[in-house]
Length: 195
Image (tube, helix red, strand yellow):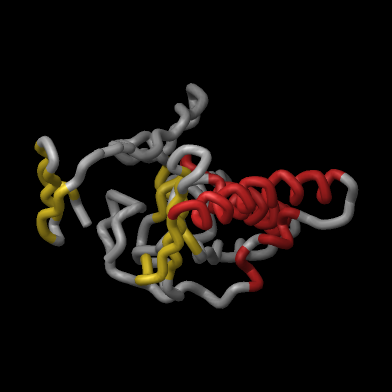
């Protein structure tokens, strides 16, 4: 849903009007600037336009991952943040190796299973998603939501520690094991707006 207006105690969205006692406004992500001399087509937020293979639309030899990439072509539900940045970095590494071997780059397939946010140390919200990456009706909140969010944060650290010891590969956590996400209609200028 798009927010169209916020006034004291009230927010208007494309899906209707809602009231609130407390409004916490988050504005999203901003891409880090690219190095000078790297001539790529960028969107209004400074993200490079990339194909499903994470190659820059201007130069198929240049790959971009994480929050610096904006996926063009068919809408593809890949949100910004750590949940897609790590797997997209591993996918870029794989595609660089494929390119060096003269093979074709593989599309990056990603589906986020949840969206989550901490609200202080004792509360959190976890929103589950459907197979297409759009939010479903399942939500965990309160202390259980905070516990799940903390578990997710700690599991990321554990994964890196295990990888450093050679016990697992972060690349193994990439979504290649998942079925391709079904294409959904969504606004291309906002990766957070579900269809």
